[in-house]
Amino acid sequence: MHKTLAVIAALGFGVLSAHALADDMTGVTSDSIKVGQTIAYSGPAAPYGTLGRAMSAYFDTVNRAGGVAGHKIDFISL
Image 1 (cartoon, rainbow, N blue to C red):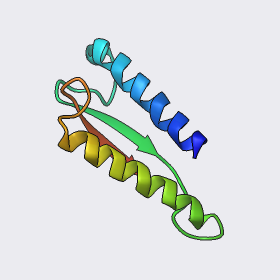
Image 2: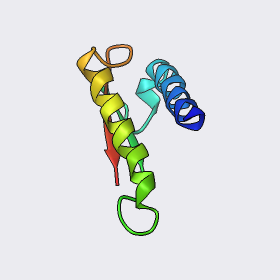
Image 3: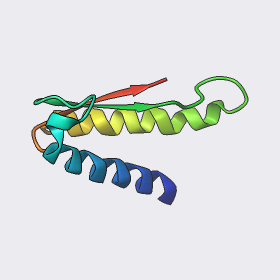
């Protein structure tokens, strides 16, 4: 659980710093930030897919609340 929170916090700090550098970063526009993740959703490591679904739900919640610094998070998990 603590590792999950650390990952989410690290992503949040990265997103906040991305706001200042939006003009210079791939995947960052004036109204969205694209974040990607690769995680197992099937096969022997499928239980780790729960983390991907939880992060997706978290970013949906963040977006419904207005995003981060006015940017919506476009979370892509494969």
